[in-house]
Image 1 (cartoon, rainbow, N blue to C red):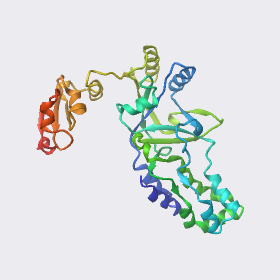
Image 2 (image 1 turned 90 degrees about the vertical axis):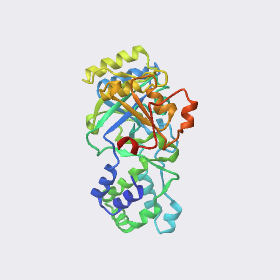
Image 3 (image 1 turned 90 degrees about the horizontal axis):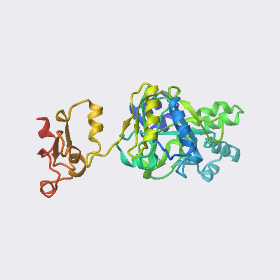
Image 4 (image 1 turned 45 degrees about the vertical axis):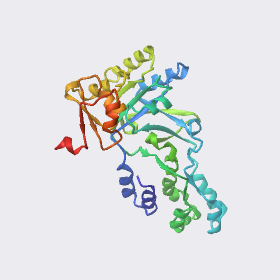
Length: 328
């Protein structure tokens, strides 16, 4: 999503167009990675899962010190532009969403290992996949190289906003808080690999709360246990998964060099001999099929070369110059 385009549409009052821009990048499936560590909190997480709920945490419990600080309000610039301290203070309050909780989801694939390492206690936890039914509550996290300065955007709507605030009808100005809500969905570019999407929800306490999945426009589709998830926890997850009508959980496993192969076979429903894996890396893409009945096709348009194949113990079934040779 283009943040400049989205904010501009909001300031112009084109809410429908702004929503269309926001919805355009929300995927049909999202994943939540969940930490297990054999502490008392594990039971709360299992209960939340059993009730088909998602936990919303208070921002101070998250792992980024810049949470809720993606936008920068330049008080000096606004003061020099003629805004009184009261008006500036009011804008500053619009940045304060400390009474809102956040739940974090990812558009990464289930086998994206860094997310398992970061958020499931080194694969000891599990993840839940959700189908996105309604997109209204979901916001894409935008990754920016520096904090966004919003003073210039405020100046564009100065008269309308100032009139609403100074007239004593501050509720009329709440429309503009939608703009500041975006402050919750901006993070530093170094987090970009997480492909994060967020939902925010007003809290009824200072710690966090559970919210029904259906109230968030989501539907639980499956549960996947981490590679190092204990047998006892897998039994618990299995029971919950079956109670939710999802069938048994899928247990992540490593098979020598091809830890994703079982997952591919399970998800496609195809036999190994009916599957072809195409990629440009010997040690990841082609290694998945190595030693199996799955066909492997190495394309030379990327990282690997014929010289690499000669030196490697991993051999593809076919080597092609590029993808055009496959589809001809």
